[in-house]
Amino acid sequence: MEPLHSGVRDTPAPRDRFDIAKGVDGHLRMRTWHYVQKPAEYDIQCDKCHGSNLWWSEYEGKIWCYDCLLDVDGTEGVFGGPIPIELAGVLGMSFDRWDMVNKQVLVWDKKANDYVPQITDRKSDVTKETP
Ligand SMILES: [Zn+2]
Image 1 (cartoon, helix red, strand yellow):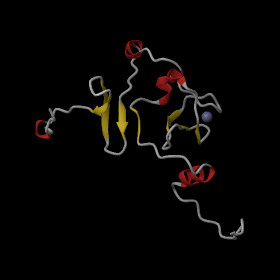
Image 2: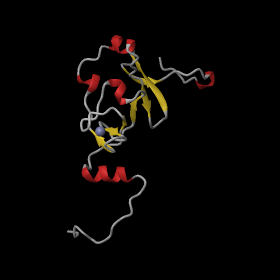
Image 3: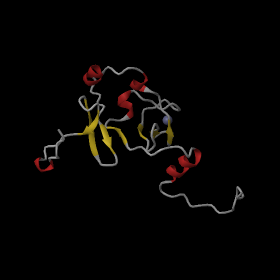
């Protein structure tokens, strides 16, 4: 076993938040998408300070609180119950997703029953359709 204190202390890197979170919970997975709107738009609050100065954490299932400067669980917001899609639309809520990997907007496709890349106007970008 290695000694707990080796005497070597790493200089905090710009992404030390990442390293800290990883150290606390090695099971955190990097987020690959987030909703296009801010967490507060979905009634999500910081579960620590109950503030709404939030953004999607880089970790799945986490919310970044600008006031606590922490990755927090956040409250469930509108996701705590069945989401009335029509009402959500009226309230200006969008469940479109930002695909952080491919840097594109994903929209819900009823036919595919999945999120698919938003169709763009680029005519040159026609992909081969499967029957
Ligand atoms: Zn907070």
